[in-house]
Length: 216
Length: 146
Image 1 (cartoon, rainbow over the protein chains, first blue to last red):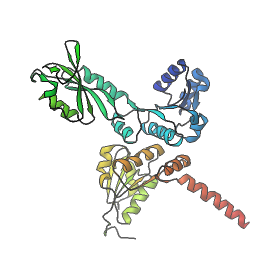
Image 2 (spheres, helix red, strand yellow; image 1 turned 90 degrees about the vertical axis):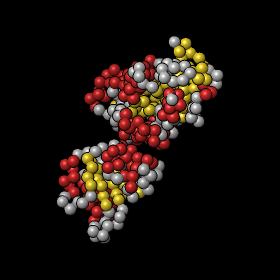
Image 3 (tube, each protein chain N blue to C red; image 1 turned 180 degrees about the vertical axis):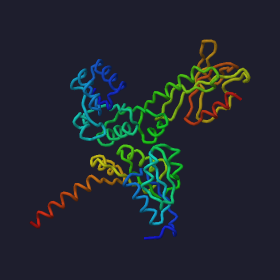
C-alpha cells in the first residue's frame, strides 16, 4: 500500500520504520529543514522536505496515488487541513489524524476527520480503568457509528435482579456480566448481583442514563 | 456610512488583530457594528487605538471559551484573519459548522489552499492572488502605453 505520512517527529518516524518493515511504500513529509536532514540520513528518499499542507508538496510526494494519509504533526490545525485536502481534493479515502490537544478532539469529529487518535485521552482512559472507584469506564468508542462500549462497576448496595428487570434506556444493551474472573454473556434472564462488573454497549450520550439504570 | 452611535445592532467577531484584523474591526465599528476582536497576544489590541468601544478577548482562535466570550454564538458575521492559514481554515469551519454563522469571511495567503477551500464553499480572500493580479496588470497596462 502507498502511505503518505505528514510530520517526522517521534510518531511519524517510528510509523515510517514500522510500515517499511511491513513492506509498504511510504513517504514521510517533514517541514523543519534540520529534522528533515536527520531523517534523510536514515530514510533516504522516503523522507521529503516541505509543508504537507501545501498542495505542491503533496503532489510532489505522489498524493494522487496514496491509499492512506496519516497526519501526525505537532499542530492540530495542520493535521486537520492535511486530512481535508487529501480527502476532498485528492479523493484519498482513508485518513488518520493525531490530536495533540485533547480539547480539539471534538473539532476533528465536527469536521469529519476520522479516525483521530489522542494520546492524552487514551492515557486518561487507561488511568480511569485502573481507578477502583470509577463507576463507568469507556472501553471502546466507535466514533463514526456513535456507539460506545463501557464497563460499569456495580456497588455493594444495588439490588440483585435479572437483566430484563433493569430499566435500561432505549439505545443501550448489556453485553456481559463479569464476576470473580468469569464472564456470562448477558441475556434477559442473566442475574446481576452487587459487586459485579457489567459490560454494556450504548449510543453516545447515554452514559449517564445507563449508569443511573444500573446503579439505582 | 452610519455613525457608530446609531448602531446597526449587528455583531461581528474578528479573529486576529494584526494589520488586517484591526483595520477591519475599526471599519466595521465605524459602520455601526458591534465588534469583538480576538488575538493570542494582548499587545496587538493597541492597534485599535482609544476609539475602539467593542470587546477584546485574549485567546486562541480555536479555543471554545475564547470564541464564546467574543459572542460567536450571537454573531451575524465572522472575519478570520490570523497569520496562520490553517488556523484560519479551521476557525472558519468552526464558525460555519458549530455556530451556523452564515457570513464567514476568511483570509488565506496561499493561493492554492484559498482556491480549494473556496471550491468547498468557504468565502476565502487571498491577498496574494490579489497582489499578483494587480502587479502584473500594472506592468502590462504600463508597457501597453509605452
